Every structure is written in structure tokens, then in C-alpha cells.
Length: 446
Ligand code: IFM
Image 1: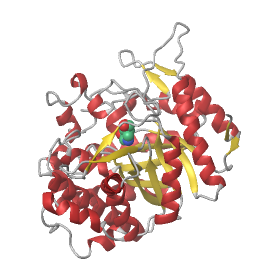
Image 2 (image 1 turned 180 degrees about the vertical axis):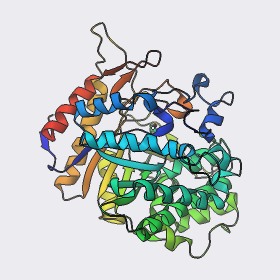
Image 3 (image 1 turned 135 degrees about the horizontal axis):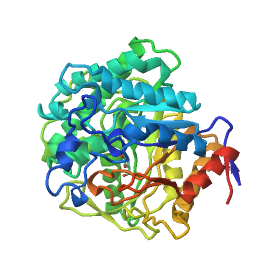
Image 4 (image 1 turned 90 degrees about the horizontal axis):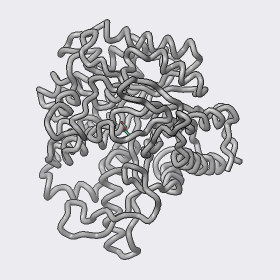
């Protein structure tokens, strides 16, 4: 048995495009994900977020489920194209949806945690080169300032960006996410503009003097381990770490980009002339908390003729339905390292969870024991970190509902609540019932 502090924030997380649906309602215009998912071959089965979990219409039912599970906090994101459907035009109707959602959460004693940007960039911004255009930072600031003005002080925790690595490198470099470009120079430009928009939004937030509210960012961090103890594999692991973790952690907490990575990237990317002298001091504005999204680890082997001088190799641990190795000890390693090398500000695990092939059995239930084990193991290591004095303040399970898993469409189920996408019926999986007990007791039992 492991006990959590009484004020530990147990929550669940979702994002707008993955659950809301109502793609054309109340003045919303398309995002780059509407366009991307409707482009042939970009998502599994051509799936889109047009309807998703129909949460836009069923939010009261979904908050009822949150209440039933007993979560203390709910992390969701706001859809930028509902708030600014056109450049410079605020849409009060889009804002009203989130005001009603927040009101319902507060009525049920659930703390609303808002992510400002979880990848659904308005298509109008995409049409002007999206995050490659430095103007995008100003559009983002207009959007985030409006959110602070409208609901700033009723939201205790603001997250500027979800997983900048995905919004830049996976989207502009690897091409798996919208807008689907494959150019590493573009990827690093997008990453820089996203980081800069983060720093500038934090500054605006401070200048607006918003009461009883904090601001941070959610980074997806994946510890990298060498396949063997050779010098070469260690170097490859160091570069993999630089690519996924340090490229974002260092500017935020140390005010610089990692020099070894700049050197490595130069050949492929060219000059870093998109970085201005003052940018790093803006990006490294102090934040109130760090959100980390953790799912797995990577194991890396040296390979000379690759950008990062390495390739990933398969670990020996069990895998989730995403093919991601289950490695809860790596969460512990990561937390310890953040504590030692980066920061002692409060950390929240803003996402952790797993996709498995869930089925409804004859009794009408979903017995997702593998997911329970996954969560339990990760909570066990999170608890170990806390017991050793680590400043971990909360855990947001990804995800409340089965939902639109980006390029994988509806083929991957991450929810602790099963969604029948034909009927929109929700069924609490065993993991939801188990999580309810965990929250209620503030402890896990082995
Ligand atoms: O579904 C995503 C989420 O949008 C961002 N973090 C990872 C999750 C699982 O892939």
C-alpha cells in the first residue's frame, strides 16, 4: 500500500479536437486537424474529429461521470478556432461553451485545468504558414490574452502548450501530425516560435496580475537509454535525449538551447538565424509548475548515417496497443532527473495512461486489467518520488474517454470510460471504478 498526500490532485485529461465534435457549430471554423484528417491517407480509416465523443453536446453527462469517479481536477483544452474563427475576430458563442463547461465543473467541485493550445491551430493561421510564421506568436497572444481576460481568475491552473515536441517536430519534421510537413529546419523554427509564444503568454499572464491562478507548460518527455554501454550507444542516447527532452527543457529552465544539439543539427538545418538574442530570456520566464506527459522510454543504438546518430531499438518489456514499451521505472528516473538537473517547482504528471484492445464482455463491462496494472505501476513510482521528497503535486490520467487518437483515428482506446462511437454510449471500464477507489482512499494497494 502507498499513500498519497491528502492534497494530491488526482484528475483526468482530454483535449478539444479529440472529444468535442460539433466541428461546425456556433461559429467554429476548421483547424489544421480538420484539414489534415480529411486529406486522404493521413489518418487511420480516414477518421476525423467531426463528431468524436460529441462532448460538445454531452458535456454535462461527461462531467457527471467525472463526479462519479470522484476526480478532483479535470484537464481539458480550448479550441482556438471556436474563440477566434477568423483572424482578429472574437466569437463570444465559442467562449460560452467553455464558460458553461467550467460552471458545471465548479458546481460539481471539480477544479478546471485549461490547456490553451493542444494542436488545433485555426486553419486561417495554417493558411499563413502556421507556426513557421513568427506572426503566429502574436495571434496566439491575442487568443491567450482574451482567455485570461474572460476566464483568467476562475481557472486555477493554466497550461500554455501541450507537448511542443509534437506540435513542432512530429508535425513539421516527421510529418505524422498536421500540417504533415517533413522538413527539420521547419520543425525547429516551429518549436522556437511555440516556445517563444509560451514565454510571452506567461509574461502577459503576469502583467495582467491574475489572482489565485498559476501558469505552466506540459512537455512530453521520454527518457532515452543506450542499447549497450558502448561509448557510441551512449552518445546516441544523449542525442535522442537532446532531441526529445533537452531541446525543450533547457530553453525553459536554463535559458539556452543545448550546444551539442545545435552543433549536430547545423549540417541539416543550416543557420539558427530564426533565434533572436532576447528570445531565450523570454522563453525562460519563471513558471509556476511543470507538467510532464509520460508514456514510455526509448532505447537507442548508434547509427552513423542518421540525423541523430542513432536508431530506436525495441525494449524487452510488455507493450501497450500503441507498441510503446511499459516502463514505469523510467518515470521515476525522469522525475529524479528533473528534480536534480532542472527544477524544484511543483511538477504535475499532466498525462499518463495506455491504449489497450478493450472489448465489452457478455456482462456488458470492460475488464481492462492491463490498464489498471499500467496506472498502478506508474503511480507506485510517482509515490516513491514523493516519499523521497520530490515535489510532485498531481496526476492526470490520459484519458477520461476513448477518443480520436490523431493519426490513429479511433483505432486506439486510451479511455477509462469506453465510448461506443456509433451510439455515443459511455461505459465505465474497470479502470475507472478502480481509479475511483484510489482517489477515494488517496492510496494504491499492491
Ligand atoms: O492522445 C495523445 C494526447 O493528445 C497527447 N499526448 C499523448 C496522447 C496519447 O498519444
